[in-house]
Figure 1 (cartoon, rainbow, N blue to C red):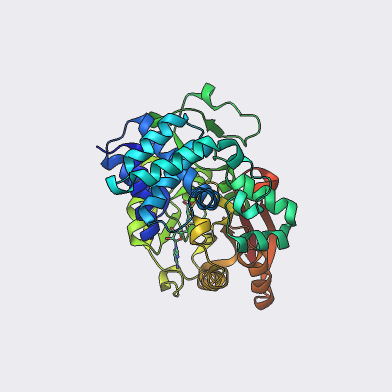
Figure 2 (figure 1 turned 120 degrees about the horizontal axis):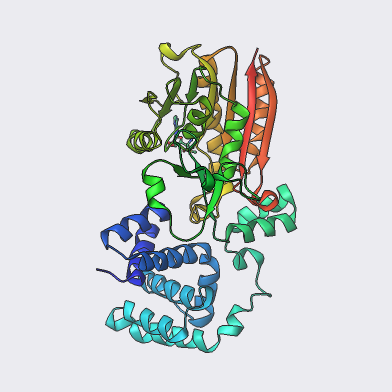
Length: 406
Ligand SMILES: C[S@@+](CC[C@H](N)C(=O)[O-])C[C@H]1O[C@@H](n2cnc3c(N)ncnc32)[C@H](O)[C@@H]1O
């Protein structure tokens, strides 16, 4: 069994080399190493702490050690300095445990860097003179882009927000009768939502009484307003968070069709719907960058397109996306998003409606894309739209636009 600190270094090594997202690597390593709840929490705190503060940690490493470092030693130092300077664990434990992670030849160097860091802790933690993108650990290009879109001070607020741990919020499943007293409205949250403090209530999750999701998720389904008996398509449906809200609004899943282009994500979608007592839903693999099959042409009253996007509205939850996203993605993604809309539109019944949604805060993927779409489709009207911004709304960022075909 690995210690959570050693597991954190392995995860960072795998993350740097591969394409897997941090959350799935943490999950995989925690189960493989059979970590206790406390060790799992420490692993989570270290890995997320390192990825949220990667630029700042590397700045500190540069201050403490001049000259080249091999990749593994850098990851060990990131894990060590995160414990010492970000999580503020006791100095002796952070130093000792970090030195233990190194191979014998590298331990002297790790020891020297960690001791120097412990001795100059206060000075290192005074970041007032550092550039904002280093303090908040974001790529420069994102700070530049958000400053242009929202102004410098909001861009700074957004970066700070992205580094705050996200609350775990769950929604009660109205399809499952649960103890009504637990479902009283919670101040500051929409009806049906509550914040999970402490360990996740696995029993409620397992019996499908709750589903974990940020309240910002609901805006697109509220705009879609699916009615019982309407035929509804959720085209990019996995893992099923919004399908759950649609089925809940319709009183069941019989009139819902869920698709996703990623076959590997379908079993999870199926499991989630089953657990949430959503039955009768048609689930199929379909890539909406290609035309829809004949059977779906003109078949739906309402369509939700919760398209793949840059995820810039959910950086506090997907802490590593900022390091993976490239400026070119914000040119390429809108092309795919537009293609998905174009292929879904013929599937609407006359007078039908479509909600386009993202968890992005970039105009190219949101209002800008819809504006260009409307210019080319005079048969469409924009009936409503909603943009949630983390720095203004205190929730995940999300965009939704309700379009109706004449
Ligand atoms: C934002 S996620 C959807 C989240 C889901 N609606 C939920 O609430 O749980 C986007 C999904 O779109 C799928 N996807 C990506 N490209 C697609 C395409 N061309 N056609 C259909 N689905 C696609 C991805 O596999 C991913 O599951």
